[in-house]
Image (cartoon, rainbow, N blue to C red; front, side):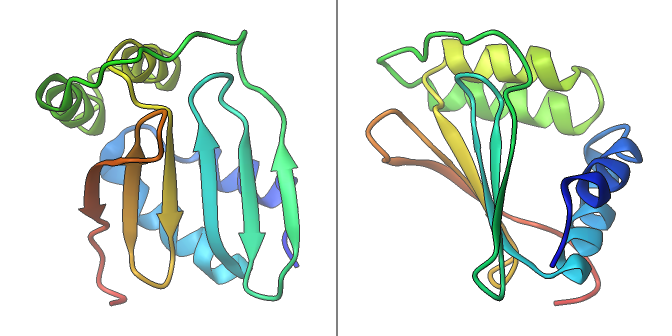
Length: 132
């Protein structure tokens, strides 16, 4: 079983997208199976391999998710964020404006999948790392 405190401590070490693979490995070692982050308010639901679940509270004031998705601009903004050019709140604001509603990170598949308001897949990325 993992705690929000463990997750927060691991997340505090993430300074840019380059740090995400190590963060992923830390979460996986805690026993996470997958997690879902909702863009509207930034809250995340963490699911353990043993069925355990915990929810991190909202991170900011609720924002409206656009009805129309702009996948090309989203991918450009995502790449900029991964290069450390934007912080998390800015990236989430960009996601909302471009129609991205949430993302789900799957530990078993080593993927992060972004979805629109209708749960259509916008983009799926493989998470790099040595532990495949």
